[in-house]
Amino acid sequence: MSTAARQAAFDRTHTDDLIAYLSSSPSPFHAVASAAERLEKAGFRRVQETDAWDAAAGGRYLIRGGALIAWYVPEGVGPETPFRVVGTHTDSPNLRVKPLPDTGSAGWRQVAVEIYGGVPLNTWLDRDLGLSGRLALRDGSAVLVQIDEPLLRVPQLAIHLDRQVNEGLKLDKQRHLTPIWGLGAVTEGSLIEFVAERAGVAAADVVGWDLMTHDVQPPSYLGKDRELLAGPRLDNLLSVHAATAALAAVAGAELPYIPVLAAFDHEETGSESDTGAQSPLLGNVLDRSVYARGGTPEDRARALAGTVCLSSDMGHAVHPNYSERHEPGHHPMPNGGPILKVNVNNRYATDAVGRAVFAAACEKAGVPWQTFVSNNAMPCGTTIGPITAARLGITTVDCGIAALSMHSARELCGADDPFLLASAIKAFLEG
Ligand code: ZN
Image 1: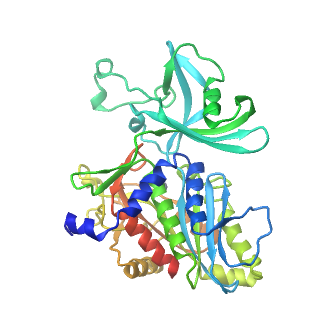
Image 2: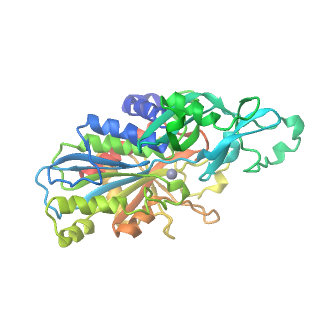
Image 3: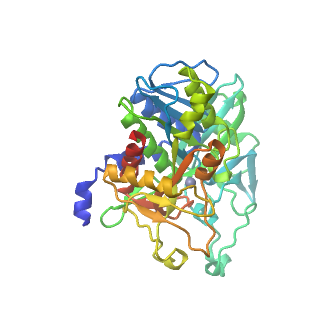
């Protein structure tokens, strides 16, 4: 397809909204709040895990920390009705603030950080960084904070002091990644004082925090024909955004399944937390949804037996400068549509049955799709798909979008792919 035809064929409204979503979601806590805002607009209402749930039809969601589960109960569905689940994750590799953050050296004020997930460390050098996350307050409440201004920076050593740098940059995780944020003497408590003031709360009331850094450069279209999208956290907020849009779009329709969005936290560190894919969070929601509608354990087993999960996460596009690292017969390209991810060693959960479900959804949506499989000499990444399949015993398919620079502070994908993914997810949820 020519660029002009592609521009005509695809509505960039979706990608424009993704850009807004990425900008408003520098942390998992913001990612779920921004998704919840979109769901509220589509008529979903928030429920608490501690409340009794009712049998009424309609859209609901719950938030636990950086995770969100949303589902839509169509009018008149029985308790044995299977679910269609889209699985995603809200977290991205980054630098996070340590418990005693105020530090410094040689007359510089610095902030102590811990490395979260698989960070290509060099991508965080020489970027202007903001701060975001949540503050836990003395009264038991929490507030979100987002500081979108150049506040911190991890300065790279000048080439004059590191003549061998282009033979391979070596970074010590403890010594070389500490951002600077000013000059002068280190004052204990000054970072939290600053952040509390920006959040509009008293520093004395802040008793805990989950704070992290983000690149303040906004996402943008890229390339001569603007056919690419460069931005932070595409892995995996692109999928969270697409799945939220798809769920909002099917709400209100008559459906043979109950559509569900599961946006987990902590995928980048192995999903082992109360908000990760290894937690009982999703299983509990599915169970409670069955029981709230008067179902029995038998209904639950019947519902799960017919349930399919589409796990959506970023995958690798073929890299023009390293094409030998990719499987030569499988070269996913940006704007070629969503990718089906396959790994026979179950790093991805896709099998023939799942492939058929995915292919049917793409066909129904009129969306092209591609296949990803690793080069045998390269270890394959993994995602929440196999965890969800093993934990709930449900058919699971791994899919995603082809990207370059995965896990970098700023990633790159095709600008049309987000809409194509959302269209495929919508068709999947409709059944
Ligand atoms: Zn991911």
